[in-house]
Amino acid sequence: MDETKELAARHRVALKEHEQAEERADKRDQLKACHAARRAKLEQEAAELKLRQEQARAQQRLLQSEATQSQQQKFNARVKLIQEQRAATATRGLAAILAGVSGVELVRIKIHAYQDRKREAAHDQARQQPAERQALVRQEHDRRLAIQNLDMTRKQCALEHTEERECQSLEKRLAWEAQMRHTQRGPQPSPNLSLHVGSLGRAMVPQKAQHRHTNAHATEL
Image (cartoon, rainbow, N blue to C red; front, side, top):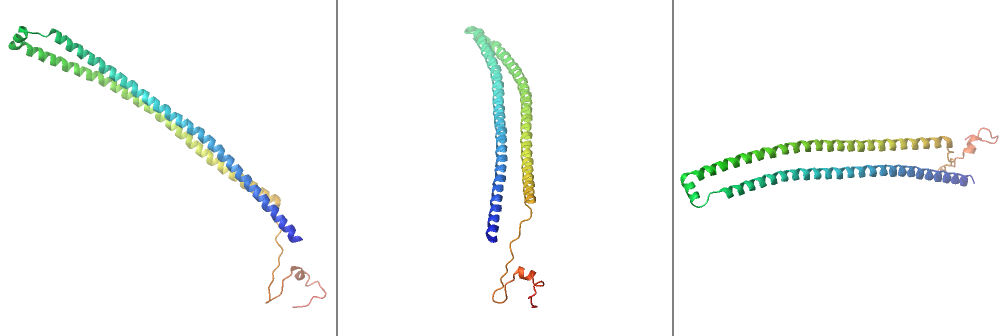
């Protein structure tokens, strides 16, 4: 009868410990789910930031490319106009022959070549100035993006530290609750001692050993 009660008590204790283990697992899962939700929100924010940065870079490249193309188109249109004006004022027929013989045509060609070189140099200088400004704009833009990336990295590190701190706090609380339950339950009764020696000896009975010196019929070993 006592053994049955003891088995039932042990079963109740094991069942209670199983329920408590499941409760601890549920709390850990809840914390993990909370961490996953916050991490997903931050990851979405990081993805949106990356997309905005890529769009900003593409927009900046497009604007700078359009400005460069517009400047080049204006220069090409000016050169074409000059060439058309030169073709319209060029000498023809006998005058062209005389100009060639007299060297006037050679002088005119050299003058046009000199004007073309000056125009090309002025165009290169004018094109270099916007390029320098565009480089400064890109540097400033990249600096802003770098600050945004650093801020996102800081948020991710802060989230990792928060998750680690919350996990440690949960484990400490679970350990404290387990200790409190153990303290409230108190020490558990130890199982009855029954040692059977076998054919080489006799069975040890604690009750007989206790009354050995008080029993009147006790005999010395």
